[in-house]
Amino acid sequence: MLNDKLRTSALALATATAAGFGLVAAGTATATDEDSEQSLMERLQADAPNNWGKWGEDDEVGALNYLDAEQVLRGTQAVRSGDTFTLQIPMTHGSGPVFPGRVPMQHYMAQDGASYSSGKADPLAGGVKFSDDVAFMYLQGTTHVDGLAHAWYGEEIYGGESADSTVHGHAHGSVGALGERGIAGRGVLLDVGRHMGGDNNRLPVETCIHLDDLQATAEAQDVEIEKRDILLIRTGSLPRFYEDEPDAEWNAMNEPGLCYSHELLEWLDDMETPAIAMDNIAVEKVVQEIDGETAIIPLHGALMRDLGIVLSEINWLEDLAADSAEDGQYTFLYTAAPLKVEQGTGSPVNPVVIK
Ligand code: UVW
Image (cartoon, rainbow, N blue to C red; front, side, top):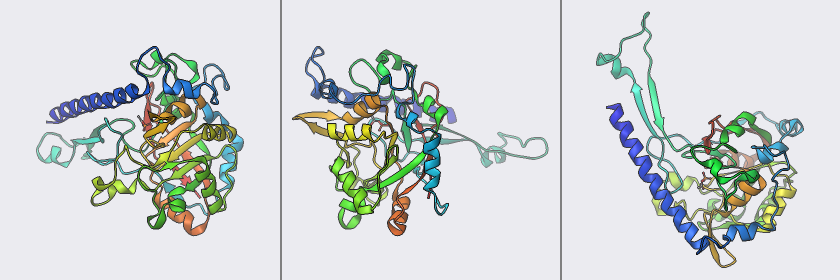
């Protein structure tokens, strides 16, 4: 029975992956007509900031190198009340906001009370009984952190390693390296949804968030974004998925998010931004028009591959944001522990914020 379910799950995952490839192929086709041409990203990024080699040739954690002990202490200095907020969404069997081509987690009981009542399992010596469960999931199928090799353009990933190093698992820049390091530092919440979103504190679908929107939000919140702050940016988009009729508006492709610009990249680089966590599916607006061409998740290429900035997606920021709107405290200690998935692309994560 369980094996049948697992086989069905594997099939669903394979089918979804194929669908995902369709999306990638569509994006590639719009970026370049001939293989010999440089892609839009290669052209755009030729004179954009780049951190390859900054932390040594073998570096796999990129801008997390900015989070040294001093930065962790700076994070602790932002703690006032000790109130904690967890940022992961619930992991629900068969349901969850995921990027097109992925499927939500599938969770099955391998052993439970019925195993004993049906006689399939016996209590352990002394009488203890136990349950077991198993999950199939895209590792980016819930709140997650991406390894730096997760997205690239051209033939090289973060650090200039060959894209061949992604085949059959990431030999370089896997999320496991981020898991070894851990993430801790001062976080600052930029509640753009509340600042620019009207009565429902939520940005309309298709909204591009630009650098001046981040700066205007910080000003309205009376908070200074400091160098090496971890940026938590709220759009207000994620609750759309959980409403009674989520399909009415929620769509991974039309969610509000950051939009590509050199200005934004230069600012993030100057600010030595280690990581960006957001409450949408891809941090950025998935489909963007740049210089009259369509680009799908261009910031994934620019931020991960070139700057080594770590991205975290599908964060639940509603409770933290409501609390911050009430007490005016937008800075805190942010911690997150990606799982040590060797050669992995991404990892589920449940970040903890301490105010
Ligand atoms: C993609 O956007 C493809 O992946 P993620 O959202 O996990 O970074």
